[in-house]
Amino acid sequence: MILTINLIDITPNIPQRLAVCNLNINTDEPEAVTESFQKIIPLIHNDKNFRGSAADLLSESTGFILKWHPSARLISVNDNPSLADENNVLNVYMHQKGTTYVESSQQMAN
Image 1 (tube, rainbow, N blue to C red):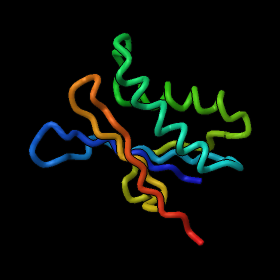
Image 2: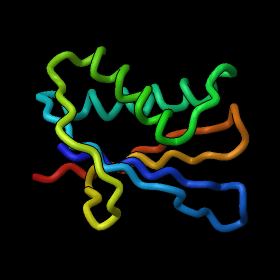
Image 3: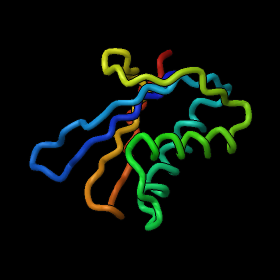
Image 4: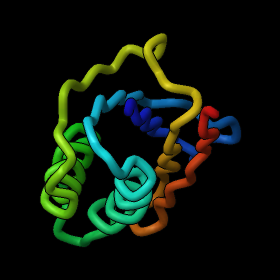
């Protein structure tokens, strides 16, 4: 599966996509992996000790996911918006520290 994660700054009046990350993950439980990312990203970002960049946030999140889902394998990562999977997207809305939230917009193909 390809999981597309959009990092979106919502502090201005018009939200802006700061970055996109496409994770190609080989897994037999795609829904569970996506849900786990949805839960872990805000936990890490909102941790008072976390001082990393967006890349650090996604790297640390992915490390937890691979531990929690031993059958999952990270195949590749890219930041090309044209390769985004519009059917499996997590939007990470970022603004003041401690107020980040993640929204899934999954549309499962038949």
